[in-house]
Image 1 (cartoon, helix red, strand yellow):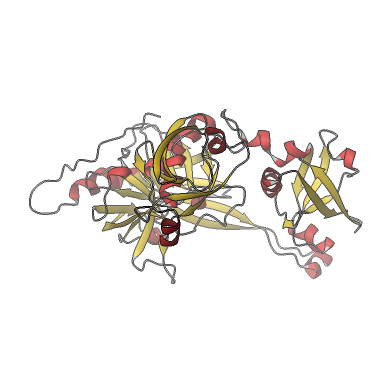
Image 2 (cartoon, one colour):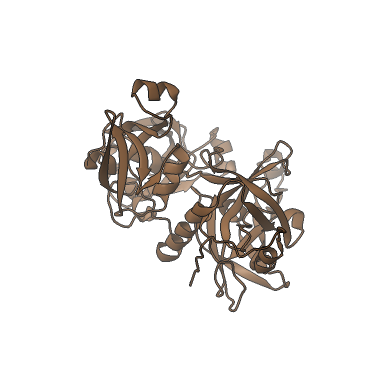
Length: 440
């Protein structure tokens, strides 16, 4: 996938602002993404008793995507294609292709698709770092199923965190550092392009701020600096190699600045350190104030998350920080979520691997029959880790400590967060409740 990146200098010239160049260069590179889903019917005991259970229904969805290579790689939002059984992509000249998912990253809401085609028009990546507040931008997408729609606006803010991704999946480390614009974006625009006046991709349109569900003033895009890193990782590894610095952080406010005698009210206060994390092993301590990464200032938490999110585990970064009123620089070798610097494979650290057991999420019918709201069943063992605790096949894990378990990824997350051991709580199909202590 040859991906081009361009500098930000505008080709537009003259006294009159001209959007034609950017529109013409990009409109044919934004596609319509159509999805099909299977929707399970809610459990009806009377219909089931009389043998009249309704069949599963099909639901349709739509969004946008951006062609980033002539051989058919397409970027869209993860939420556009999440859970889809079938994905179809239609280009601006009405050619339709079946799309396969190369990989997804819920923590940035980015997905990479592939269609079997060649010679496609594609958009070059621009440098979102060079985009400035007040710059004109265009949003290109398919709002309300209106194909190839272009709207204009300005960049209203950068490094905006709107807590959109944080609640989606507990096992993610969400990165929110959106470009905020006032270009009109509506349902159907998700996954579309945000471009500068040279027609270079500087963001993927992802969300709107609205009480009605339609555009009411502000929209948000994932910056191209993150998009390009995520797509490269998905193509090379099938999953994102997320680098972590291993700190618990807090935005510096006036009170913190006064307590630490800081000259300015900006920077990131380190309030805690991850065990065996990159920061603690490099000499960073609590109450350090991080002010830059590799010379790029980190005035707020989203900026720090975005900067670290561009790197891979094993990369070395220079962290500038304030300690006891002095600026010092520390080289930090970033690590992955399990504390190593190698390639992270999620399946190697899945709940099944950690527990040495085969797991299955219960469907609504099973949950209803057992009087449960959530649960993951152990359907078999691949090792003796749980057997040695006395856990038998068929046990349904409902809680790890006091945390509800609805899917195997929840188990992975709670085990990773544990510092010594957990209590696995649940129930057997015969109604017998049980709890087991597991050291980790």
